[in-house]
Structure formats: structure tokens, C-alpha cells
Amino acid sequence: MHLSPGQLKVVLILALLQELQVKPQREVFQELFEKDLRLCPNCFFGQRELCGEIFQKIAEPSDWSKLLKAISLLVDRRVIYFLRFKDQDQVVAKRKIIDAQNQQIKDVKKAFYELGERPGGFHLCRTPSRKPRFVSYLEQRGHASASVWFYMMHYVSPLLMQELYLQGFPVPTTYASCGLTHFQSYAGRTLTNYFEGEEDLRVELALQLMQLSLKLTFGFSDFRIMLTDFTGDNFAYDEHTKKVYLIDLDSVVLVDASSATGQAEKYEPLPGEGFTFDVSAFCSGHQLDANIYQACLLLRDYLLKNLNNERLQLLLEQCVACQDDFCDMRFQHAYDLIKMLDSKN
Image (tube, rainbow, N blue to C red; front, top):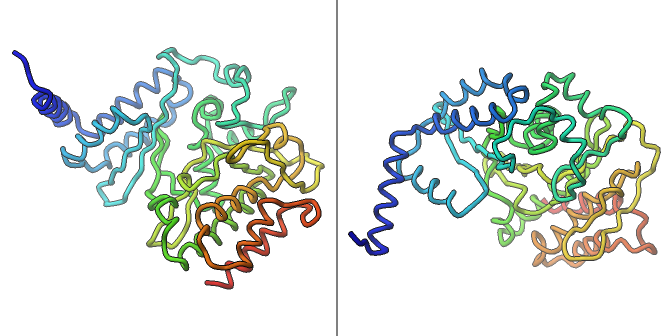
């Protein structure tokens, strides 16, 4: 029997729908978690009880919603599920796909140290001769050692999201990390949806971004968070709380400043389009203004691009260029911008 392309599409949809009808959403996540447990038992065994409770709280979406998600996964490698708990909380489940070839990872600490530099992902400034203080810090906070090493190597966002939330940073609430799936609260639409929005709203978003660039730079417990992907897709705006949230922490350089002796210093981006950087510069011991540079770049080129305010546009340009004759570093520009943006609210 020969089927037309249209008939094949119908058969495919019916087959997918049939599969989705017999597999509740909570079972999908349970199977994914069991898969992660086989990959690294020592990393995730302690998560079993909480994750079991989380899976039972998931409200089943309609078959049509599950079908659309299944189809989207065929063409999009980003595994992001928009869910709802039975108590009506909106939830985002983000899953990291790693190339582990289904092999069990036995020594995650050794694997992390053997990992090469990855400027596009997570990089921990560390001293080879001693255990990173960040690992000890998280172990003291109750994280399993194997889990810390694994997440730093493959998917640092669950670690940082949970800790930054507890430290009062504007990030979504963490409900649970279940292996390579992270459950967090829904934080609104990404900032890219507001680049052409009302002027007053864009000014408010710009103000919160500048404040956040400083907060990340100063960090917590002598750890500085240096983003290397400060783009509109990685921030969201919740129209109910009126807050900007940082929703993605995969591209980060974490600097241990506990023994740093360097002073604040201007960051010089490498030649190229967008934000180009040298990881070694972040780990030099100086307090760099790279977060501020990226925030000013985002405001100048996208969020406030068409704003009719010459003084504001000039200050943004000075922040980005930061020429030696006018700028030792960008921290003062950040404070000036915050003052100006705040006065316009």
C-alpha cells in the first residue's frame, strides 16, 4: 500500500498521539531520571525522594499539547517543557542533552579535571594544586560531591540557579534538579519580546539589567559571576512581579575572589562580532567590568536602540567604547546610567 505525503503525516500524528496517550508526562520524566541514575548513580541517588514527589505533582497536559511538544523535539535540540503543577504553579523543565554515549561515569572529579577549556560553557577559575573552594562551599551547603563535579562538567545551571536564588538574586525558583532535568518556576517572556515595546517599560528593563550586571560582578561569598552570553534570550520579564529574571546560567566564568589581590580593571574585548573574551583574563585576579560592558552593549544595540534621548545614548556609547581618555573602567558609567534610568521612571 502506498500512502501520499499527506496521509503519511496523518499516520505519524496518530502514532505519536497513541504513544503519548499511554505514557503520562510524569512517567516520561521518571524514565529520564532513571536513565540519568544509570549514567552516574553517585551523582543523583540523593535526589530520588524529592524528584518522585515532583513527578507526582505534574498535572497532565492535553494530548494535543503533548503532541506539539513531541513534534517540536524532532526539530529542536533544546529540550524545554512548559508544565503546570496540580496546585496550578507554572513550571519550566529544562533538560540538558549530553554526549555520554550511555556510558557510566565513575570518576566525575577526574573527568572534570581532564576537561579542556570551554569558553562557550562553564569555566571555573581554579588552582590545580588544591580543591576548588566552590566545590567545598557547595558540599557544605548539602550538595553531594559527585553531583557537584558532574554538574560543573555538564550542566552548571542547576547548581548556580539554586544558590543564586537562596542568595537573593533575581533568578527563577528552583523546585528540584532531577539528574539532567531542572525544574524551575516560569519567569515570563524573554527580553527579546520587548525590544520594540513601550519606552517606559524598556527603560525599566534597562535599569534592572544594569543593576543586575553589578550584582553579578560583586557576586556572593567572594564568588564573582561573569556571564559570557549576556543576551536577551537569557533574561525574562515577569509582567506580574514587574521583575527581570536571569533564566539561563550555562555560559559562565566563576571567579574565586577570596584570595584575589587585583584591583578593578577595564575589560578589553577581543576582536570580532558580539562579545568576544579570553577566559584567562577573567581568572587573572582582577575585578573586571565585563558584565557592565555586555549590559551596555545590549542596551545600546537592542533594548534602547530607538530611544530618543541623546544624553542617554551618549552615556551608553561611552560605556561600550570606554576610551582611555575618558574611562578608566566602566563601573562609574554603570552608576551614572542607573541614576539616569531611575530618574526616568
